[in-house]
Image (cartoon, rainbow, N blue to C red; front, top):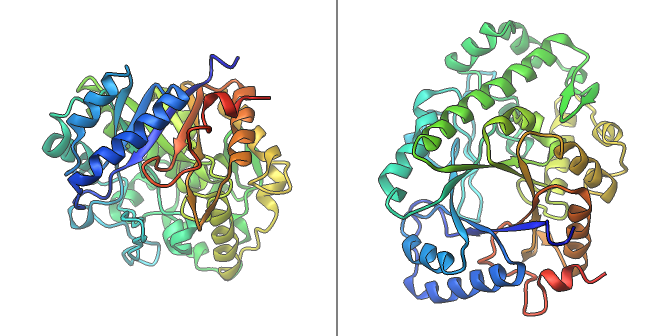
Length: 381
């Protein structure tokens, strides 16, 4: 089984228009080569700074027979080029920019202009570099990390028309979201990778949200498929994916592979500790005590523990494309990863039988990788 498990590395070059220091290139190449050689990686996901020397990176990767995927956001990062999402009170979503040179303010996912932004940026800034595929990121609604109202999704005219067309009384949804007691937002069950809700209106609303995201991401993916490019998708860990509109099973039908961000020690956006805390806090502040319900549905004491991780991998194995579980290997104050955590996680991934692992979230930053941290030492058991 050891020879079957495959590895991909993920490298962040900065936001779209960040400065790229040409003096960093040699260092970045050495870091990439160290990780790629140590784990015998098959691909690198790299982006999305328009100023980075991608032709040079790709030439170095091709020398090792490694594919290059452009890491590209879809419904965030585009600033004034994008049509804003609107909450159920009719207000634009609040801006949410991180310290890590990326933007977590999400635009409307149903707006055709927003759907076409990623392909437009690719044609303008990246098409001549020789990428083998596209890795689409930020394909969702806001999470509870951006506040309760943003987490409920987009209620612009375009999105509301979609909900109504699928039989959702969106005015009734807006009305009950204004009620003091919002216990109806607590999931009632887990069917595969999708939550169900006892309240039929909310159940239909969440299903319609997911259908909108799936449809819009497919339209974006098709633009790249028509260019002859392979498609990878970045999604949330399964306990949170459906809550941000990601139906992993549905999206697997048009993807070559999906990378769920099962970041079990990262206390930052997409990390399970971070998303759990914000979900519980935002729900509680808005009349919905959800504490412990998701853990019960996943039959685990914690959404970040090994039991929950194993269940996620078992369910993910049933989707229609390859799954590469994201594994943070960065050392930062918000990411308490270490060699033991990485080794144990890799062993669980290998035992699950999924395709492999994406070494995340940025191998160009400080990682637990070293000359003795590689494929061999990780599986020395």
